[in-house]
Image (cartoon, rainbow, N blue to C red; front, side):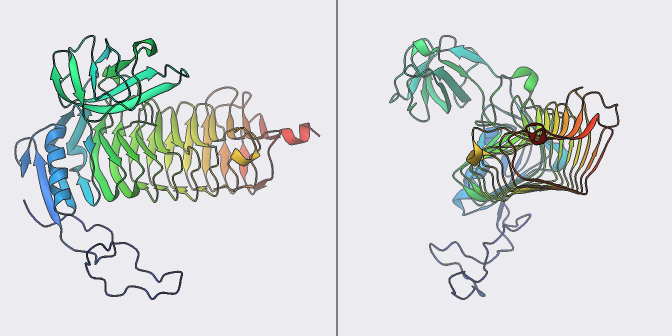
Length: 436
């Protein structure tokens, strides 16, 4: 093991406090205090298929490195060139950065297997019994799905198999939901490739993640993706290719101050990038989002974010989608090309307070929407206080029934300033005027 890190972890802000206390100008490492110096060197552990501090080509080797570095208080896991196959997620830790070797580090999800459960398990149980255990192994990451026996709602649980006797497996944690046979419970080997939960101050960079979608079931971006983060903060993802996942490329839920830059998320069945519910201040820049169902999806309550200088090409439905309480965001200087239905969509939500207000759309190039009846920008519901300016919205493949900007009948204030709109059957279709 070497103690030289590839890069220093970012230090916390040392600016003056809003309450008048003086700024920290000479920080020291003090027990229990997160304000520290920006250390130039930290522990690095290398992982490789044939050599490295830890050798192996599965998630177990990389997980061992993450756990080791975390025990030392933080640093870097360096993944050497090679092909790695995962049967479970690597669970990340605070202050531990994952650094690959660029395109030479390729991590692929193994094919999923599935079985029905053959016995009831109660919410307090920590075990399940499979109807067919062929293909399941101890250590596998699994997803248990069922219908709630009380309200018929969906139950989705992610767990790890930690022990077995025949078809009977112990889980790493209790179910906390009833997996009863009337709810048709199933288990599948589904998981994100890298996962973080209630952690912060980490980086993931310079590697290729392949979801092997041809050989896997779907697991949506509320639960998985090539990278999936839940309740995290200060996460920096750069230089990552996230491809072929039967779900999202990169998804983060209730995560704050996430930076995603210079990444390529493509050919996923779900969303290219998914700043998820409640995520504050995302910074999304210089990414390529291609051939996903949707390119960039602002989920619920995503606020004060900036998406700039991204390229979104050939996404099957929408280039950008903004909706439920997604307010005070800026989308600027992006290339949004060949979207199937809409270049930028403001989704219809259930009432005024739930819509995506006070967003600014500027200096984007929205070129070609492919379906015959489609829109460069579509503003639905009671969305208002939008500033849409200096965009190029252009259709080159013939107008058809396409519209440059459609403003819904219930929409509020929309400022259209200095936009160049050409090649559409109708440049601006304002349904508010049609309503009188």
